[in-house]
Amino acid sequence: MTGGQAVLAATGAVTGGEAVTFWILAPLALIGAIGMVWARNAVHSALWLVLTMLCLGVFYVLQAGPFIGMVQIIVYTGAIMMLFLFVLMLVGRDASDSLIETLRGQRPVAVLLGLGFAGLVGTGLYRALQGRTPAGLEQANAEGNVQGIARLLFTKYVFAFELTSALLITAAVGAMVLAHVERRKADKMDQIATMKARFAPGNYPGPKPGPGIYATSSSVATPARLPDGRLTERSVPEILPTRELSESETTLKGTEK
Image (tube, rainbow, N blue to C red; front, side, top):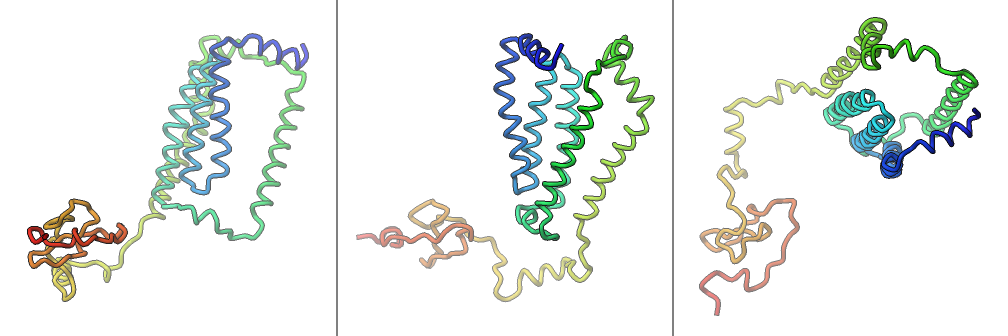
């Protein structure tokens, strides 16, 4: 059977539900992959990759591979990617970090090297698998696919498995060490110094009045009115824009004519 005949045979075996699911999730997986590459924020890039991994897990389940599908969702999406997000948010990466190039021209070189590596791997796989049929799958899956994977994972490849887990843990601990900032003793304030700074001249040690107190409006942008009738801007959060009050709003209650 030629390659084209194999593709046609595989296409003809796809049921209606599988086809509908594929045409819904395939664009989402592609959008997630493109978003991972183009996102300027590292956290957003990791979230786009989570979307792609979830779609791949559903594809595995559709192709009668529930074990690898659940592993894709639980291990890669639920554990490893969440670990990446935890480390990224702990270190505190932002959008401006990805715009700073320490080496001039590194992005074009990285794109060329990536394309060359992908072509090299694809060519090697094509030449290695061309004209060959898989052998030994029946013996490996004689007692079940899950049992066969577990036997290889915890016997032949147990060292690589444990080494990978130790590497991930080391990376998380290293990120926490790098993100931890040890304060100098001169920057630490005891209770007496804190109290003196609170009651220093120019500070406001008491609680600030809430927005809208003794005012004609309950809006958070309306400054509170002191008992003597003056407005206090201390009650308005600094993040809010300055509001222009009308004459009726600045007039004291009970004095309108």
